[in-house]
Length: 95
Length: 148
Image (cartoon, rainbow over all chains, first blue to last red; front, side, top):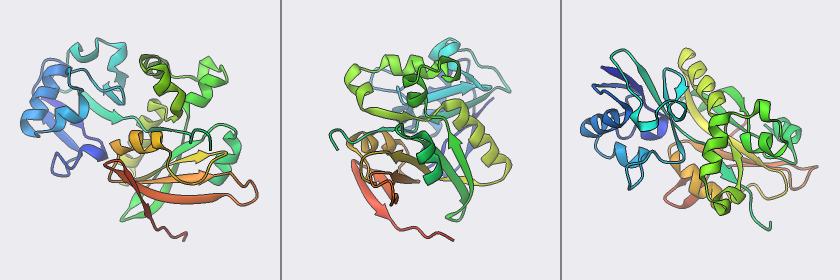
């Protein structure tokens, strides 16, 4: 089983749990597995094409998966995955 | 937070506040990778974020004035877990505009509908202002706060 840290904004989907576990062989399968347990989670993490949203960062054992194999990054029992939505914003144009 | 805003001006500063039961006990300054990039300090710039920023359209990028460094966020969240506190608020500054969310803020911060978002305005340098909001479903609702 892979341990997954759930960020505050997604805990409404996990019944308030900050850590959950799911079986998976890679990140994509992990997201599907989590979505089976917590319906709606995939929509928050992935876009319509199934790609990980631009504002969402996923870490495998503290490594950004963008530097590994993205959604095809393999995972194994005992791994820790963190989902970290970006906090970003902008200035008021012309203000 | 006001000191942090002044330190980073004219760039936007950003950070996180954590605590328990709505009472803030921990303050984390988070690196604004947009400010770092504009200054050309590549060594301080998290490469993951360069990739992310470069994936955005130029229109989207032009409106982004702060983006929290994910490594800093990660470290802050680790510290929160170690201290059994939870994320209560994000904050960022508006160096020349009012203490209210911009359209980009409302779009981007909607990923965190359950926490407060504090905006520090330095529009009047002698009288900085700070307001807190909840941001969800395309709207920002002011939230009262008290300084203890």
